Length: 41
Image (tube, rainbow, N blue to C red):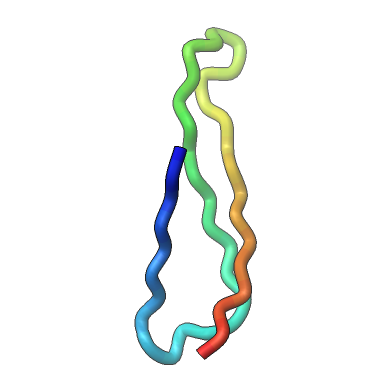
């Protein structure tokens, strides 16, 4: 998996992104990946 993030101007600081991943596991069809970042302007 590869992800790219771009922030607009004046959006510096900490951010939390949540990615929903679909799986083929019937007991857990969706997994959540949390990405924490701190953007410097």
